[in-house]
Length: 60
Image (tube, rainbow, N blue to C red):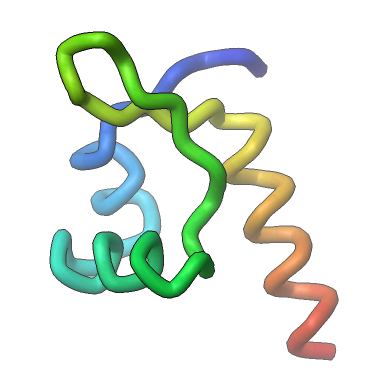
């Protein structure tokens, strides 16, 4: 469950655009990401699932 996802993989799973993703990051609403030394971002699958669960509970 510690799989690291790329931004395109997360975008495909969430079915959102790249601009939406970076807007969420800008306003602090995106899941936590890891910034690699080359500047690329990775998101742990467990963090993505936790983030989605939080969204689900806040919608109830």
